[in-house]
Image (cartoon, rainbow, N blue to C red; front, side):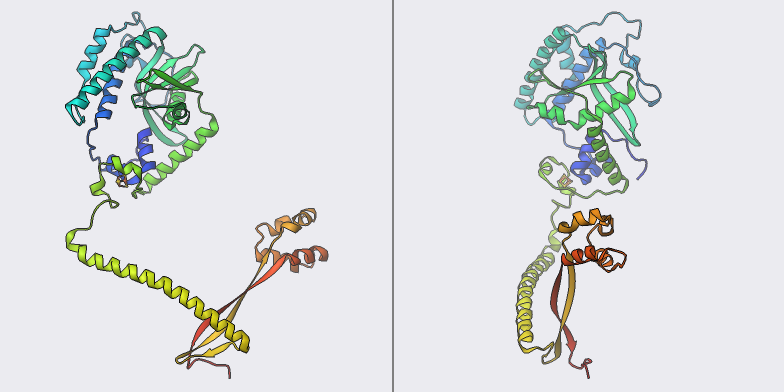
Length: 402
Ligand code: SF4
């Protein structure tokens, strides 16, 4: 693979869900079928960007993270000698909505008009909310990137507000039907945005918010602590390692329902008709051999047990058959349960000698003349001998003891 890509949240999530789908999307660059709800989300985000962009005020940012990073002034056309923020009128808002609207991906004109009406209502209600709340945005739809302890990551952050407490709040709009506080608390996307903002801005992050637009509900959470970010960083590292190793195996699950690549995926592709009959008979053969294997195993065990019983009764270890002779062999192993003597070993400073409790370690200790004989005796007493008998086939012409 050429250069390793910077991971966005959706790229990361796609790989975690199914590496093969990631390859189809990010290496083969196969297009996905448009879907109405994605189009809807894109349109709403775009209108909100236009609504909020004139309100953006500059703030400090960390320097040197990336030359390609867009600066605030690019977002903020007014520059630092700005005229006061200018709010859209409701009519301008709806004009922007009409301009941005796209019919792509809706399953029917009825579905499209349902979504269109929903978007209109949602935008007007959110507009009223913004007028009341008067947030202080410092960025909208900002592309941020960084190396997160060696892992290249990037993302577009919907909005970053300055808080009354002098920090920053990250806001991510959601147009989905349902959203809960748990979604906000557990959102890996918000965690990644926190990392991106912390690496790019001077002010600390004071809050993370998923904004549920359908119910006008901000679901606010505290910034993530270091421990949970370490966990997420490990997962990003695992994804990057997988991509680097070109590990693109399919990982089937419920998500396959919405995958557009099923006809290319080995989990869903069907055997070509020309190979159907040959492979079907191989599968049938495999199935009956597998059943036979199970039956033979049971029968083999029963026969061996009967022979063991007879050998014990008769006191013999060699039993001739027609073509070969069965020879009875013994395998012996000792197992030690050291729990009862652990305190004694601790007191004697010998615990590390039998760290894993393996037979070899314990035996070495029991035979060590430098160890107190009483300790050795007590350790030895925790042992139990396990004997296993088994049969070996010997050719009839084989070497019998003379
Ligand atoms: S169909 Fe399922 S397993 Fe196959 S690529 Fe798509 S998501 Fe992965």
